[in-house]
Image (tube, rainbow, N blue to C red):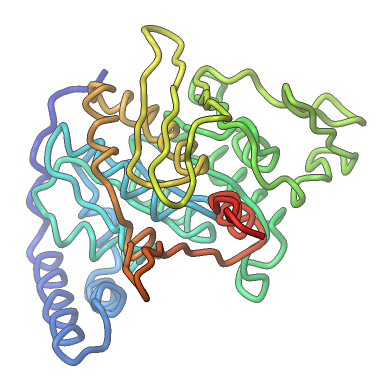
Length: 343
């Protein structure tokens, strides 16, 4: 589906100096125990070369990942899937604003592929500078309201940026009305809808088109006051409700695609939500030219993500670390918990 990857062009001297200065500052941050240094290093690099992001992205096949929940995990899975094609630059440790993106690209100057997590508020600016070969839109829900404000505002910002810049393909979650609204200005042929099976929908109860009520059913959703409705997905995740997917183990599902046999996905990560993330990744990987069975196998090797899902033994019991930071995240984390054998 894509040409063979090539090494990105060598950036100009100013850009190379900016990258080197950023790495030096990042290294000092690590040595002094102040963190990974990705953000401060990226800030220094951008201060020295404001056009650095566009220059570092030039010549790469870059896929951006954004959404309220699941960005870091999805980006890690995407990096694994694209890794079957070649070296991948990625910020899958979570530094997802412009400085973190710059640091990720600068740390892998010869990587022909990039899998980049982008904060919801930064998607438009990063989209404009990077000119990606694909964008993955996961979900939109309430998060840190002191930072992101009303979730509808984020959806409108996405819609304006995507409608103006027309990246392709846009891999979008058909089961999230706010994501569907955000992708509504992208030409039909440039959007790939993925049926993930839903999730947290309390933040999408109002229609973003007419302010009417969104009605949800087992086979989709639609507005009761206008024609806004769930698009028909070209790709669809199918999960056996009786299959184990709890926190103690991994998860298994099947992704149906428009052409060819379904792709089996077996993850080391728990939870149906991660199967949904993996389904979105498969679409992006397919458009990058990856063999889907190879991509699925690579995703299955991911056992932890920046500390998430790490296991430890405490007082003789094995525990797994989960991260939840908002209502939607808590719903998915609780869904992974297995019933107690005793009251």
